[in-house]
Image (cartoon, rainbow, N blue to C red; front, side, top):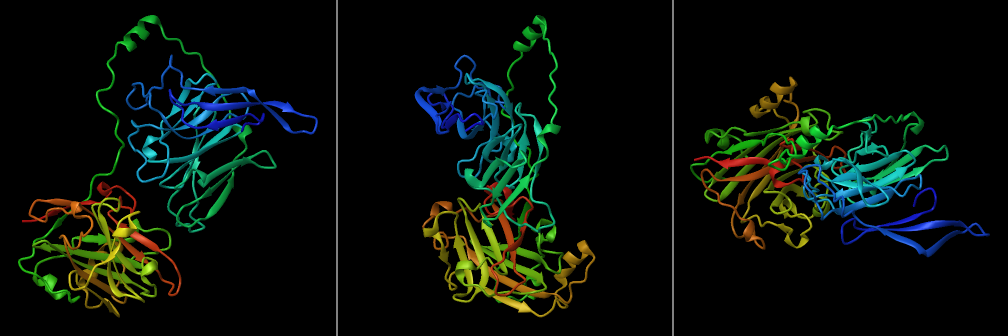
Amino acid sequence: MNDKGDIYSLHSWSRQNGIKVLRCGGLDGDGVPIYRAADRRVITQSQEHPFVSPYTYAPEPDVGIAGASPASDGSGEFCELLNLRSAPGGTGLLNGAGTDAAGIDASGRARWVLPLGRCQGLYSVWTVGEITVTGVGGTAAVVAFDRDGLGLGTFSQPAAPHYNGYWLDHPQAIYAWKGADARACVMICDNYNGCDRWWRLGDASRIEHATFPVKLEATAAGQIAKLPPPDAKQVAARAATATVRIPHLKEPMPIDGALEKWRKAGVAPNIIITPETAVVGINGPRDASAVVRVAYQGRDLYVQVLRFDDVVTFHQPLERHYMQDCVEMCINGFGQGFKFDVTRTTDHGDILYRERFFETKLAQLLPADHAPRVIKVLDDARDVPERKLIESVYGEDLSDCKVTISEFKLPIDEETYAGSTKSLFPVAPGKSFWLGFMIDDNDEPGTDVQRLMVWPATYGTFSPAEDGALATFDE
């Protein structure tokens, strides 16, 4: 609804579906708004001027909608949050998110387009006076722009409150309104903590609009019209893929938590996880850091995680096993592959727990006789020279830190992948898979807290598999 009381029913903006508009005919004698069915109309996408993708520069007739907001001035214009198939970032696992914003005039023609497709998911759109806002799903940041789609900046939670929430996951996660002082306010609710925060935005009167005449001569226009379209779709910029080599063990190795056997086998730690990739609350390598060894023999993965920590916590049942000290290893993504969590629980002891996002029927405690595991805690790290890999980075002495040794063997076979054998992958020299680690930390025994750090830096539980590291088996 805009400031004049016009109601917009915002469904799909495409050739087949439109935006239903019910104009307000004023107020009756009791001050109740008047709406007449005869005043209802539908705005559909302009067939004379089809929407043109800002990425392919070609018409994109099948335009999805993730939200819309009418202009406050009653002009009949509105801002659409679009879901474009051509957007390079897509929306990942986000529910009903959009990719880009566009301003639509009263006839259904796109007046401007604001490409935001590299944000990988936008939620909700609200217009308050001069300001329109939307939220970035993956980072819970707010993007603000004006009536012409020109950027007014972004903002998110400042560092001081130590907020460690994750993401937005529904259109209702953002709401904007006009405060008593006529300033725009924005409230945001994240999916992880269910935490509501709100901000009052700056004075919109400071926004200055200016127009400039642009003239294109007929000759130049003809030359531009003859230019060929781009050959390829634009792609989102991304960090280089992290890689790791998985050494080949000459013979099977006992799962006993001992360190010397790895050294004798010539397997040095091939993964280092530091607080550089941690959320707020992990305050340096003495608080939490880790080195990891991964090797293979036959179809078995061998993993040993040496975690340096100031406080060791194992106080949770299986249901909340990640809200304490825990090692999470993800193979080929949480959406199509599996995440394997290793920790000590109050109801099931030392666990190796298999999970896949949204498919709870596939959650399984792997039996110890098939996938053995052991967890040991050392009182200090004086006899653990692997700590020097962390100390050399930070220049800090970790010798008095506690060390949690989490060691396990994970067969990549039909029993481990029961219920999803199609997800099995070959374990052989030269073959590869996607690998990611998350180290969960809780320094407050008895509480439900999950602070964490990841490896590689691009990995996240709900990220695509390719955001992990490309792990390749050695000869």
